[in-house]
Image 1 (cartoon, one colour):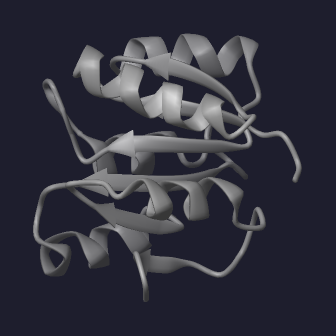
Image 2: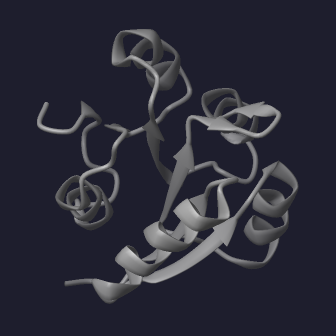
Length: 130
């Protein structure tokens, strides 16, 4: 298995830590950014293989954030969204933003591992099991 660097963009510190720990337990390197500013700063010094972004960050919509950064710092980076919003509400905007996969909350660890370890650049799978 190829070791990946995964950037977790999550404003809930406890949730971010749980996700980062789960990713690290599989042998991957996990970084955390709590907001857009931290995401931009991290992307200036790191080149993650994958970004896992929360659908609703404090003061920002995760899909809109990805869309804004897609032509800049997130160009060419696989992005996975985890969200508690209804899938029907987010599928269209997520596809338009170039998000590779959507994982519904509550997040199942097997779905997280599958998303992190899927081939990079793989065809988009909008929801776990789809």
